[in-house]
Amino acid sequence: MKYYLFKQNNSGNFYIKDKDFGIDENIIIEAENENEAEDLFFNIAKKYGYKKFNDFCKCCGPRWDGEIDRSFNFIELFDFINEDNRFSISVHTNKGEIINVKQ
Image (cartoon, helix red, strand yellow):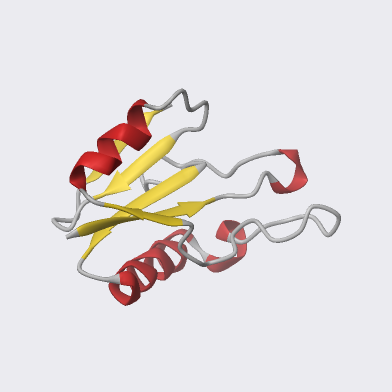
């Protein structure tokens, strides 16, 4: 298993956050491969509502680019989380759990 990072753009000068859906500035998804991670990411959008999930202002651009920003193994994931990182992070495990790591 690997961990795949999707980063949210601060479109409209705000981030969409919803702890129940595991939506944060950074969403990390545990998956077998990139295709599975992308499918799970789009499933989050579907459950949350595409319109709300993709809300953005024209001057700032799209909220999500829908592409994987970075991938990690287990150790690299912990290094990323422990970096001097001011952004909030939600991790979606392959067992369907949501772990809100940084607020």
